[in-house]
Amino acid sequence: MNPRVPDMREQRIRAGVDLGGTKIEILVLKGEGREIARRRIPTPTDGYQAILEAVQRLVMEVEQELDLDPLPLGVASPGSVSTTSGLLKNSNTVCLNGRALQADLERRLARPVRVANDANCFALSEASDGMAKGESVVFGVILGTGVGGGLVIEGRILSGANGIAGEWGHNPLPWARPEELPGPECYCGKRGCIETFLSGPGLASDHERVTGMRLGPEEIVRGAACGDPDCEATLLRYEVRLARGLAHVINLLDPDTIVLGGGLSNVDRLYRRVPALWSRWIFSDQIVTKLVPPRHGDSSGVRGAARLWDPPTSRPLP
Image (tube, rainbow, N blue to C red; front, top):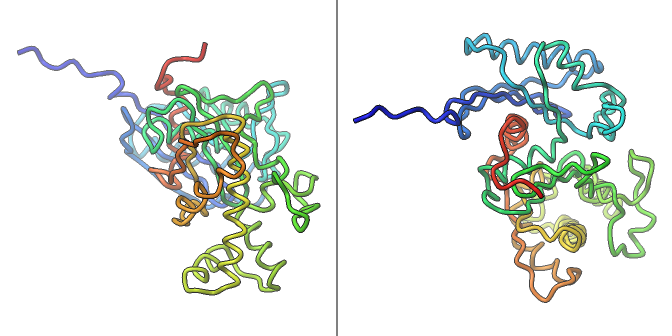
């Protein structure tokens, strides 16, 4: 019997880094998605150069521990790379804005680096081997410190002509009610952005505006589960707003699956309540779009960063 010839896909090793607001995570993937190393460190708070140094140190330490040659590296970052200047923009880690993140990391690490929006990486991970595997159109949602979105079509990230495809968090909350206008101020300079209502801080601020009590998102969720009427009312408002926001996405993109990520994706009731609500605003007689939690949890972003070096999982776009 002839010995089995190893599939090159099974031997492929690549690294991903997730550049979060509070932590930097590195993950090394082998083959079709086997994790062989992972480490997290706190994100430095003393500026851009400190973040570059932290990424460089993390990558080199992991490669040395595994006795690996320099690996292909993908980076998931808040914001997006400008298609004209190559500089990062729209990041809520503001020290990254206006910086040549990709070029600076390539110079420090002496290798090609691919940089993509963190929500795009999240969507790519879940479309590759997560809850949306095999689906044609996948929208990944981040409900965390901010609100982001990523779009994967036929296994490929769609970044758009301006590098901002999927940025639903900086559109106004749709079908706004009088009490929601003009809306809270957003760091982007506008008011009433979806992010100001549906992020974790947005949920906490809404609760405080209505009740006068400052509670964190987890406290609000626990309070609702324990029968606190104020916390329950806050979550109901949140669910209606999320349903309206995602109805906009479905009307525009008509995705097969929407995958929720970020801290608020852990609220189990969202997956029952929101699809029961969103039909009021979706322009269709039936809605087959699925709303699902992530298979890879808060590691989907870093897995997607590593997968920036993978070939598309489905047929290419025409």
